[in-house]
Length: 150
Image (cartoon, rainbow, N blue to C red; front, top):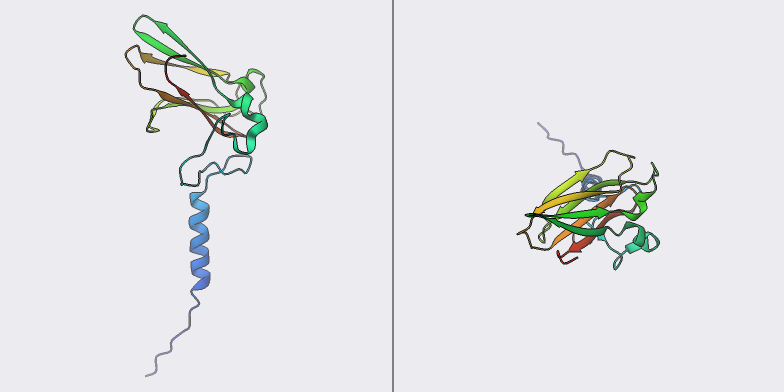
C-alpha cells in the first residue's frame, strides 16, 4: 500500500487570508479616504487637524452654543455646510461622547435629508467636558471639545 503525498502551496492561502483581514479592518467613507487612525481607532478631524479636508474644515466645524434653563443645560449643535440643502452632501449622525469616547447621546439623520444640527439636554450638574462629533457622508468625522464654558 502506497500513500501519496500532495504538495500544497500555502502562500496563496496566506495571501488571501491576510488580504481578507486588512479589508475587514479598514473603514472608509464615500470619498475613499480611510476614516481609521493609525492606531486602529476611528479618525476624527477638526479645524486644527483637518487631514486632507483642509478646504472643508470651516464648513465642517460644529458650531456649539450652550443654553441653560432651570435645572438643565442644552448643547445646541449647528453644522455650517448643512445650512444649505444638498442631497449629495449631508450629516449622517451627531454624537456626544465622554472623554473616554463612550457614547452619551446620539441623533441619526436619514440619508440625504436636510439636517442643520441637533440639541442635547444634560442636567445642570453635569460639568465633565464632552466631545461633539458630526459625521459627514463625504468628509468623515469632525469633533469639537465642549467644556461647558461656552
